[in-house]
Length: 321
Image 1 (cartoon, one colour):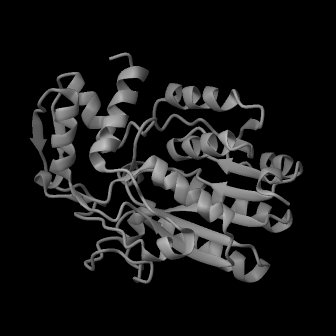
Image 2: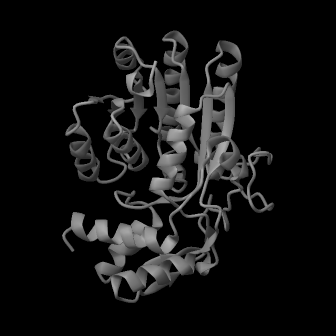
């Protein structure tokens, strides 16, 4: 079977990474079945706008379905699915302090439903989003996939670590190829409104102060969405019995650097509320991507300045600023 004959199920297809991945695959002629519950965690209109772009492709089918709905998933898998890429999840470290049960339902029950569907329907490859948050407050920098990750400091992180363990069990028991991708702070056009770059842009353009946590003393491995998509496609096309990879930029940037580049791009200064660290947050993330380079051919190409420029350009066009 050629790649173009495979039917790929992309869950969370109206989300930031799901949409970006699906669009790239559709442009390459791949057959995509997309599902999303279009929940209201953030602006549903943004999700619908992404979806409209995907619906313009003949090789795309959409189902408005929640991965918690096992019967609905059974109907979809009856149509034959070759590869699953699970990007559906309740996202966000901070929201897990507010609504922990949404993480149980989506990230644990929903994930188990998909593994069961893969088990009973001969799915050749199961790729899923994990997260850099699994490293918790690890002191060793950069974070390596060989590091122990037994000390999550948020429920979101714990749910993502649980996904890796569940995938390992299903890979072992039922010989399902499973690949987990630990994404590091993904940003770019069509990004999530709850993330720093989006929040900062919105606040600065609307003359509101920005909240800068840990008094600005934070570092992140900001990774541009196109690079994340390239790494995810590599994992889809290179099945392994079980493995976990870091997908990060491998260049840690200071939060204040991001703010300075953004201010320059927007042509205005920000007013800053300097605030303490939030519960569940970490001071620094940094990805060791040598294994991803070696086995996936992963090589991030986009600098932070170029990525922010592209995001601001999209933001101005989409919101007509």
